[in-house]
Length: 204
Image (cartoon, helix red, strand yellow):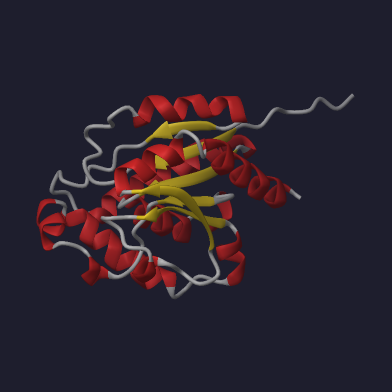
């Protein structure tokens, strides 16, 4: 008799600048379990002075670890973390079921205040990489991605960051931080449903 093996759906949550202080995000995403996904907060360390490349290698290694045994793995990139999510996807396409960007910055290097780059050099390196990776995305890649953003974002402006072909979900809220909070709370069912649907497609 065959015994069905229960596979888990892991979500790696990649936060934005200031990730050394989660401000409750790490606790909120644990509640996503009720929607069938297990999210974990991964500190990137944008401001610690380390180059982005080793940070990317660690995220990739985490994907490998979580995917062991046939488990599903997805990414949620928030603000600056969206660039890290895209870059991780590009090196682990075969192991990542879906990607959600929340108020995310994945392109347009010049559209960022220079002070962010000075304090968070790894962010600039990640954004340079993700800007180049955007041009490499195929339609099949874009199908696995969802862009959730505020109606108006005072930090990450919409038009320069939109990638044609990636579906967009706009929330009826104004502001960067309020948008992030709304996304990971009220829109958590939307995020979970999208990722679970992409995971189901990947397993067929």
